[in-house]
Image 1: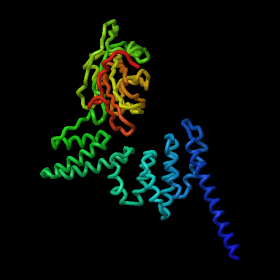
Image 2: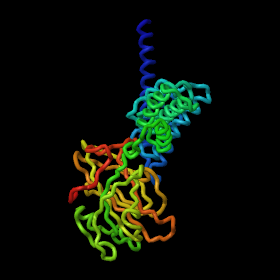
Image 3: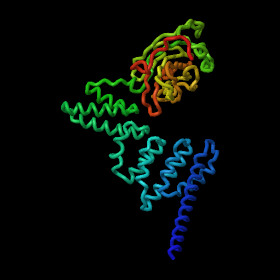
Image 4: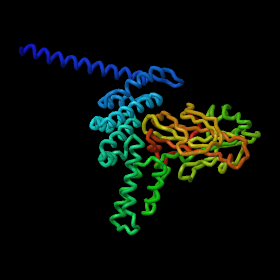
Length: 395
């Protein structure tokens, strides 16, 4: 009899194990089908069917679905997000519970996709009202810019409260300085940086925005080359073929042009080509600078300009865009590039068209170097982010 009982128990356990394995295999297959979806509808039919399977999954499967965000393309991520939200809504509406401990564990593993981690945080706060107070203060330097923003906002609020009545004592002001300095260290969004800057400057502190954001300030510039009828972006003028800051060129209308040094004083690193070089119409300008890196690594180059442009790093074209006068904003264009250890040469081509309307007169750019979270990466040889290209030739 005892042997029969043991066998029965073993059989049940084996059946449960097989069922769990089958369910795990089905979940993994559905995740693979969703992640395989591509733009223009390729794999969409299979992904839609797989989404139905994922959306019907158990709450305990949420961590596995969150992990599937890692490396997923935007379309696949949308499917995964919808599945997570459907599972959560169905579970909570039925009075069930989400696996809060497992969701929090996933959230705290910063290697995971930041959008998935943010979604995990939002779900966690629905079932654990104490989660924000417990977790957000730890995220001042989090890779997720959204979670980091929440942490910075709390510090801004704390600093503001210390100074709220306008009659803060010395000890309160000192504490406010510390809190706001910590907030600035974590802040990456311009609105928060400006709010912190205003508070700190009110306390007599100076905030170096170019260094905080990583703007490149010092350049060598040359213009005008011809961009009549917007043909100049496609033409490889001499600086693209061989970069030599001592060279003289024959520019637009056969006029001799040379490189000039310029360091912008704009706190957002804006180089106003129209003011420095002249308000040329239908023209191309080049700007170059050196960046000293203490190691080889991938970085973000973030450009703002209302003009058409190309960017090279060490002679290799990173990206280009032909578009005129659609506005200019911080981090308007984001590109990745690989710095090498030592000297790196950056070259930018900025094209102005022939429009005469007042709103079409801006001929300018700003460029900063940072990591994927927007944290400034400064040139290794100086406190400022950059220096002018001082030697002839490029890589």
